[in-house]
Image (cartoon, rainbow, N blue to C red; front, top):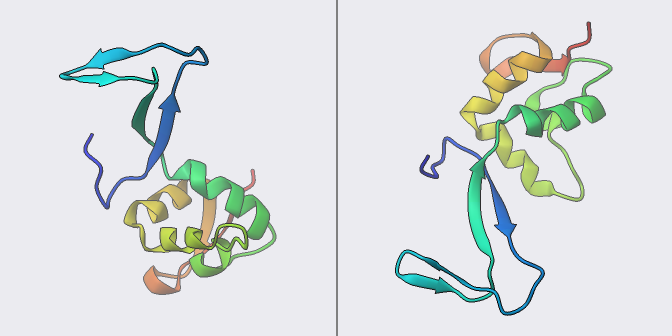
Length: 107
């Protein structure tokens, strides 16, 4: 999968605790024995904590759900198209399109 604006990735660094380890990757030598990779993340895993914290008691618009004083950049998720589809898996909705509001779905 190629990184794009339509995907969310987690950066993972896999390394050895030992010193002196290295390996070859293609035509390169990785001297510290670590490997950094991108792993795709399903948007639902990002939605659930914010739904639990901010939208368990009623329906709210996206801009009020994705609020985090420690990580203000989380608001950028509101413009991510696949996020709305993921939210529909774990929330109840009211309204249409731009006026849609979400609440944690409890059974």
